[in-house]
Length: 79
Image (cartoon, rainbow, N blue to C red; front, side, top):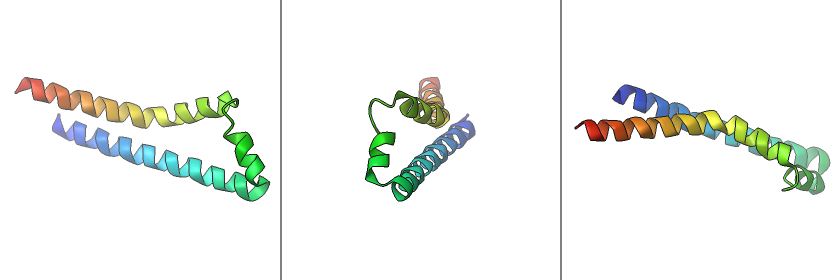
């Protein structure tokens, strides 16, 4: 079980880091092509689809981290 916990934690951190980098690179790309007003348009709180897409893309990494934490708690109670 400890191996699964370590693997899930590593996958979760790698996934979240890669997603964050892709989001930042996307924002930089929008800035370069459309300027600050384009970034404001993309990051607008009224652009719900953008935030839904970010949440869906980030969900597997967050789920892996949550699952690793659940395994850790389960191992703690088995002792």
